[in-house]
Length: 385
Image 1 (cartoon, rainbow, N blue to C red):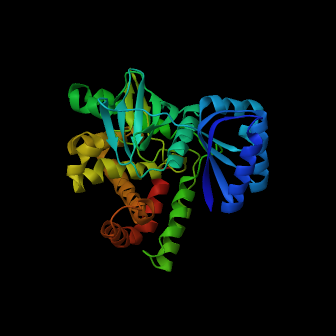
Image 2: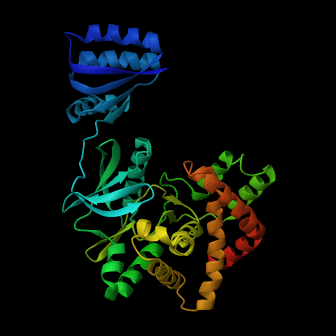
Image 3: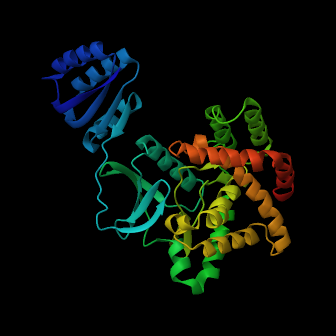
């Protein structure tokens, strides 16, 4: 059983031996220790040797809530390479800050002229947030126009990431507050969506979208028969692999306007793979949600259902370089069919969703998705070369 042991005050040659006795007594009692350095002010080489001995005994050692000063000691001495060191998160308040966007897993606030903060829901573990920060950094380095992520912080009992976003605003407000400029921003919005799929992320330590989808199948044994799971696995494996970036959640609340440039945020789901995954996901929020759940559109996209659907048509015209509505309608049918794949995986993706809603999603997939799998794959090969 892992036990939290608090390091307090200053640890030096005068008290290091006593600390070692206490630590190993606790280790023998609990079998594994995690050290909490929230109240640790300083640690000398004598104290470091005690920690090294504990790490050798346990096989690994995690130290949490490490202050900047103490972390400097760990970094300088090389101990950060030997142990898992987690910095103490600073507290940030969003009281009286402007709310500029809200999504399914958090809200975005402006905290200064230069910075915004994404505050995650209370159900989001800090490990997932740290992962998103690293994904955002990887995307930025790869050339994706995105906000620069800085610290992971605490906001009350929740967690957040601070991004540098100088005088930026969500594009949803541009569409709603400046309708005379709709065409200008819609073209930029569509261009950004296509630009994402021009960025190659394979081989940069990011997951494959197909592998992520396949991993969900292991959690669906209570929802589908063995034969249905085989069919789902077969279908995902037939989608041609690509090296391009897949954002996973492209919509009007995840795109910021900074001067003349558009930047994409919310990198929690980025991966690499076939663009159809992004097309299907974005089709759902721009077209399916406005038709089936119009009351949710303003809450999650900050635009009206009419604007959301109009934007999707601009995306399609720009993405496939055509204004032929028959062609666009044909492609939309294929993309809509692929959007049912993610719906089929809902019980594994949205664990906190009520079982009734999961059941409805599974039944919809069985009725509408499974019968058209072969047709969709054939259409995909014609649509995306």
